[in-house]
Amino acid sequence: MNHTPGPWSATPSDLSEGYECYWITAVPFPNGERELATVSGPQNRNNEANANLIAAAPDLLAELENAVIAMQCQCDGAYTRRNRHEPNSFCYLLPDFEAVIKKAKGETE
Image (cartoon, rainbow, N blue to C red; front, side, top):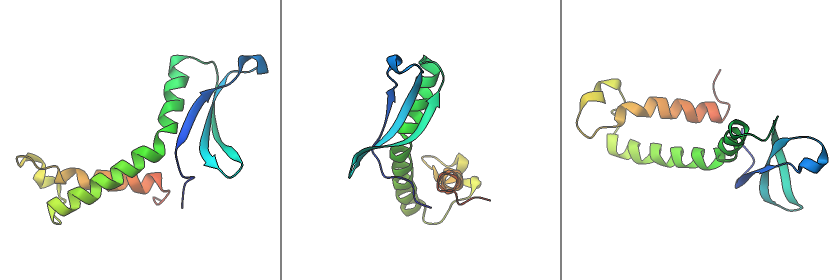
């Protein structure tokens, strides 16, 4: 499953339109922006934070995938939780990172 490529942005609705929300859009698209999602409700800090988190999703996923690649090279297959107490070892995080990537890509059951 592929997601809409980034960058994504979060923009508050125009209050003169009669409703409050944050639009999540992807740019550029051949015809300009493409609306992806809406965070409905008042334009408050909580909804703005939710909208910003959603808009950051493609960037977060890409950076997590890059981190996993780098960690796999360093860990050389030692992905187990037993590495948790080794100095300077983050190998134990790999299964969790890989699970989050699968969840983001809809590859979990």
